Image (cartoon, rainbow, N blue to C red; front, side, top):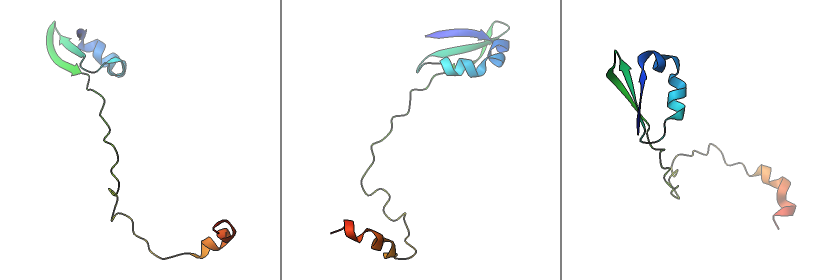
Length: 77
């Protein structure tokens, strides 16, 4: 589906045009009744599922600190 707007309308309402743009929808921008640009709605990015172990090697432990576990000894039995 395509709609046309003048350059002046596009400049005045660009944020609204983009917000209303559905995936695959086109808005043709006209100047002097001639097409000069086209806005095309992009489909939403498909998020890839998380992979176990994908952050391996990205965490650096600067010091072993098991002292804070002393407060939880009664719960860890």
